[in-house]
Length: 277
Image (cartoon, rainbow, N blue to C red):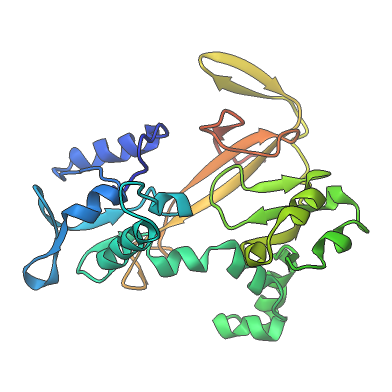
């Protein structure tokens, strides 16, 4: 597991580690900085870790933001380049990696913006029929690239209908309301490509009261909204299990009054899916 230095969001990581260890799999945790000094190439182009031996799988819990590639004990710009090349080195070996650079780029907000701006006919290049592409297009949120005209453009529109997002993953990477024009005004031209304007979603909350549990206490919420995520497993580009690689789901719920939904941050909570009549 490639992890962040001094990571405190480790609960689900440890659950996964314990499940693997119960099957006889050895797990180790390293930062990119630790891997920089410890990786090498073995026989059969296998990835070798100093003091451990051959590595079969690399699971990245870090590497999704620029700060993960910063090492202050490596001089200047070389630090980021060195740790970036460490990740590239991993993917050049016979080892299973999640997520690969291509997977990360494919799910980035920049690619989401490009897909949302494509016409239905262009979306058919991904194996969709024209009818399927029209259905998908209907659900793609509107996203607009940021440029020198964005501050004036947003000033003429209701601010509660838009959100300013950067390329970061996780919470804390969105700007809302009155903060949008000022943030746009403070961006340098070389930062424009790292941001996009997205039409804000206002999902309908649950009709009944729900209850969240935090630190052993119950908190009632009258406006809970939920986010459903599906997990799939693919090996070599092919589904590793039946039903298109489906391997499970996760539901995260939060109050409609908060803009961040992180479970670790205390804004959201894990939830369950129940089918009713």
